Image (cartoon, one colour):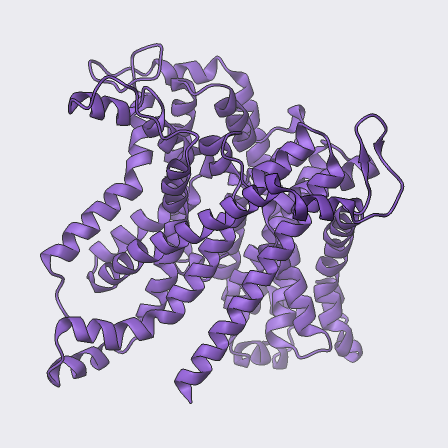
Length: 264
Length: 292
């Protein structure tokens, strides 16, 4: 293994700076003591964090996003786990087609999904509803949950399950006591990745959400297109801190590098 | 799951019970909306009467024939190409550096490089908007360095969109090249060095060819995501620098010409799938040759 030269290390430092710069910028601006957009050059202040409390629409949007992400990640996992076990371990007619179909939302731009749901829901009378938003998110994130639980279910040894069945365990008990614990890291990692993907989603939700079901990214987007002020910076900083905590959890649970290999 | 418990004699049906709920849900809530959007693109639109009941290719003829849309599609394609090239140029060396670091630095910097993917695109784009704005850091730096008092702004420019999109998407490039580099046997590089190859030759002849699958798969992800990106072009590019996604958004939510918006969306989808599929075939053919 070769050592890295100074040139490589300088490049690395610049790259990391490039990655961090906009985030540090947002964090810096959120601590300004001025009433307008500026860097906190002569004094730090938390006034813009207190200001979040005076803007309940951001807080409402945050809870909409949390509930939406929780519900849709759970439903997506409920679809993905049995499907991944069938796809990974059984040979049946239509197997590849079904797998490709359940992964197909990855190939569809979010914008296209957004306009499709906008029209569909306004036709069937679900326009702007929370149920419609949730269903759209389930479609969007099922591939993520499926991919991670497929990765765990593929190459799962059958010995332990065979042993359990031989010893008289029912299929359900075998699943709950043997199979599920074995694939749990993938299932949990998939749930968390789905949760975060749903929580961050903007492009599709912009079309589907109504003012009553506005998610946090949609609320923030509409705010930014109107005005960029320190308030949006402090909301973003709070979001960065929260995401960072979830990221550490995801890294512990599944490994961040494994989560993203081949995503897209 | 309870169906599985009784699967006994009907074990052949089990895979269908297990995948069925997902498939039915997808047919109803993905198949139907997509089909409706396609059908909508075949209707014409009248600004006073709304969506018409006719069947026509007029929307496709309009989008494919109008210089206004040519410009938007051309800009989007050029942007995607440029962002992809820059992501390869800076992502490949970074992936190489990451693969050469030892722990704990490796884990720390993987987290630093990949972490932003989990942070909302709106937040990351906001960071660049703060840099680019007329009273942003860019202007302050230029004024401090004595480049005059004129505000320097990259808002609503192609350059601004490119920088922000590279930042948003380069982690995908780094991770897919990094994954390819993980598979390289370090001894192949040692062998080249032992046999007298220079460091540069080793990099070019041994490491780079083995990293190629990662570079290609990273490129396709970055290209496809740039071509359909909405948030960053909408915030940085605005109405002055429309791309396909923001143009479709305006047709739906400002002009209210849904059939035309549907046409743009369908064309975006078709282009997206065509590029992914043809690229995959190209990669397969290319690497089939390598292994022969």
